Length: 609
Image 1 (cartoon, one colour):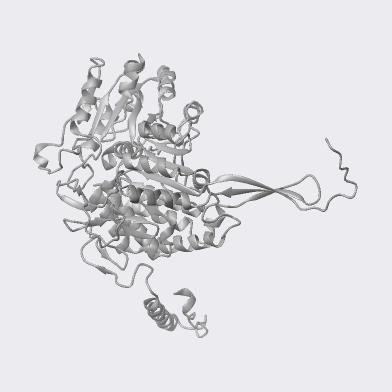
Image 2 (cartoon, one colour; image 1 turned 135 degrees about the horizontal axis):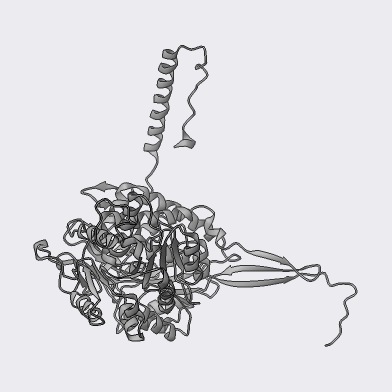
């Protein structure tokens, strides 16, 4: 609107005017200005759709959306193949082919119908594989071929970001996320906000800046070298259930920005979110043929990858599956695998109660937000003895092990009613109980600090048995027990993708043991060093490797915003997400072009060597 509204005429307002006259005239001018602005804005077409209507929180029926997050049956999900929405047999969207029913994680009732492709569907599998192979190795665009597509994706990103700024659209996606992967409103909306900010970051010229090149002088007149970021061509993306919008959106767009053609597969339980994102992208100008989208099981996706032989694959999820894929693909893979993520509480306890409570709040969030179903969730907490000493922690009437009791108190406030605790989608109650029992067998000093049970009967929930429903839980394991042999360490550092963490304690003279434990861990995604003691902090940072490490009194392990690298370290296959560096690393390779344009030197000696 700013470019369409004439500025207010202020020529009649001067210092000689009386205060009342000035106020009156200014008010009149500004009222006219605002009125013209509103009138102009009312004439602008919405970026989302011409038929926006809201009926209940989170329901946005537009020219592109197809689902209702508030209905008992949310909708159905199709596959996207070569620009067309098709069912699992490859028939068009009007087909009435059989669907896979996804149960509501809160009730067990049918919630979403998904048209899955099976490995036995030879024709449609061949079509998906052919679509990937049809993309040339030089990609859909590169710095020399069709560079205008960089600009087009900048415009698309601008429009998607603007759409996600509309309250109705943001609520729509947040409600859809919370419906298929039950998490609190704050967690669900936070995912939408991060995704929106990512699109804002790559609006305008920032897509083309991803492919910025560099040159170096040659050896003589007419020779120079140019380093370029080059796409791979046909690629594959496999993403998990826990961030149904953020992870697929950021990795998908990174692949597209750099000129690749991806086939995207996410967990069937949450694939409706990606399907709706793709419809929004199409509405905002993305060519439907630029990306394929398949609903299928893991074995079927593995078969598709074998058939299509994508030039690069991005896998986010289980370490076990990642290792299998790496062998299958001959190493042509980037991995953001599961993380057994640690947090070390340094020896320096803050002198004010407010900061101590903030640290406890963040530790609770890191371990138990979204019921611990984050690859960056706090899996192990090393607590320096000072944090449990009533004489050193500035909390009134503190008794016992102060910090651990604060954690227990915060965890007890989590409720199913507001989804601060909820269904565990990949780990059953029986699996969690077996793990706790296995830890308790290690030593008589091992104990359950809090939790350790299924959600209380009085909650009266209807979460189906195929999902977990467990209280936020912490188990104390002494540091010497953890480190005494390989089997004990393996058992203690086995990741439970749910509301569970191991807590251990250490003193000043046990710091080398803490660092030894960090060295022996196999996954190195996130970590936190909660300390403002520079010497202690630097000692820990110097001897650890986690790819995204937070340091300082406010350090966390979770939170994968769009403004910094997020990914593991210590592995040449480690994938990042969100930042310019991550996109360039994962979704492009280096190409060097050496120009030798002459002229031939007049004194050139044409000697055979």
